[in-house]
Length: 239
Image (cartoon, rainbow, N blue to C red; front, side, top):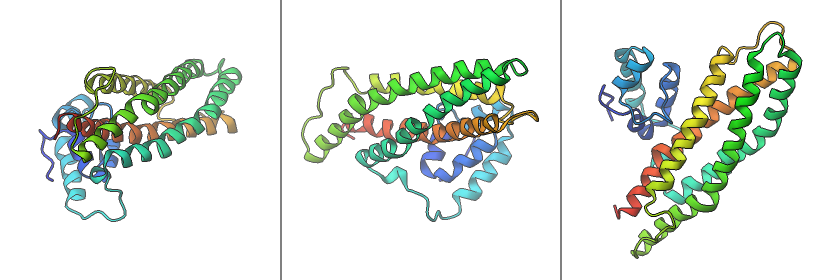
């Protein structure tokens, strides 16, 4: 694949996940806003499209080694990977982050008032993600697996209680965008997760945990928005 200004960010990252690092380095959102073209993304962020495309082509022209070929995976394999890796990470990461953001805000909030806002923002993120993952695991993901099973048996696609699969997918993408925007605001409030000079050990660890949470979120949302959900739509359409 060759990158052009009119190629969507989603297409590039779906074709070779190594390119995600390039978009991150230049400040372009490759998960929640992956439907934008490279030109649009660069215009929004002020990144230089010529430089970015040159870096992308350098990667795309080099054979990948040891990188999961997510695009070649079937829906069931993607679902198992998302739940076993990303959903598990989120569930493990949220309790200590809720404790740490609350503790840091209580101890350092007078000198750094942004910490109180960060505490509230992450509490909303945690509540949203808890409900979001439950809906995926209990409703959407089993339905997508059933679509794939029907396609393999050459039988009619099942009917969901929500009409077309595009409806719950749209709801999940909206929730992804909310959480992504909240984490981007936290990144902004922390100056890129940079702890100040007077930060205690818990303060520093908290920022490291927040950064790891956002990094995992980007990978998590990419696999759903850019790979699993398009597969689901194609399966429902019989493609």
